[in-house]
Image (cartoon, rainbow, N blue to C red; front, side):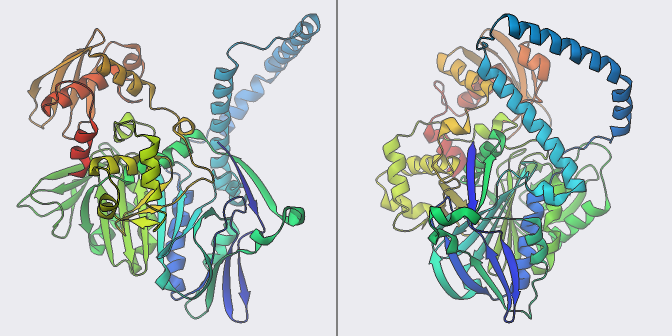
Length: 566
């Protein structure tokens, strides 16, 4: 997706006789957004924005050993042979061009997509190199500038990490400012540079600090805009789709677990001092009736006690999360934390950490695995509501935010003439399209457009091809499934047939396929590394409906509502 950014100037932190002035330059290609106010507690803001910066630059993907010297040696050895081949290729190509005009080749679009993927792989590799050696130049390879929203009661600062596995949202109550002026509500991108981060570190409590989203550039006509900074960015599909799927996952209700500051400190300190050298490397959340809740770190089985939980209820909860090293970005916030909440959806699914610091709240969202972006597994795609919502219904739900840009779910149910199940599905779809954000700390839905123009499902791309094919098999009714046994660890073994192929699979308590057997080409090549094949997914879905008493058809919006909202 191509985006154009236009800034009047670079964002700066200026020092004057009265103190410091933080001036963020908004994107002039979007609607006017502005804000001015004086920070009451600059230190809290400095540390919180610093944690948000750490989320932006975090990239914990596996980095192989540096073999550049060996590769250079190999390149030198093959240089003569490569040069001969290039000359022969150029000569032959010149002969072909002279003999016959080159027609438009077949399959141009697939070739373009293949080359585009190759380009982004090279760009990410170059980005990793610059991150180590030239951070200022690396900054220009970041996919998108941070998103800032000015709401009636709060300011939101959002970012997505370089490895597409972490999301951060800093909420700053407007009560944290005084002497507000020139307030224009809305959402925009702001120019962000490495120097701006360095200047943030100079904030002190004894200096007056003014904060502003500079509105001056909006008053400059096009003929006077010669000094403006123009940027054109081609957002990678994985970045955009990952961010939108995160918003969709965040719009669903989750189990809330209270984490004390002492527990979070013990967790971060143990991970800092110890490094797992063997699998498993998960972080287990254990909440069982009659037993103290705890976080268990594998493979050491290190138990970190948690405070008593009132929201889990009488049901037992056991969730495994991976990619725990990404939590280190919260270390600098420990002295300011009032309370911490962890929201979970299930094993291997996204988790959300909410850090409360007085008038500031940081939401850190983590994908199931560090090396899996939000689109790396079909499990996240299947969280979406299985219903085709009409354009009229989405328009009416969106119109409810015109009177007030923040709404609770109960208030929307009272305002709109739709069933709660339909409103829930509509909010989930609007979140996937980047129109609505679920503010977890505030327990409200906010109208916030991520992109200047509304997104469409075509721009986000379709579901995983295997998931689409599984839905077709289910709709055709060519599925049979039966449970054969349950293992001592609680895994369910299922045998069945989908599309004429016999399969066997094991699923855990969250419905996640942990082991499978199928003779199709997808499973033969990838096993479960690229997600389960269509036959395994279809048999799993069929068994799930049989277990819930729904013997035919796909999952309905009612069963989806019962699964997530009740």
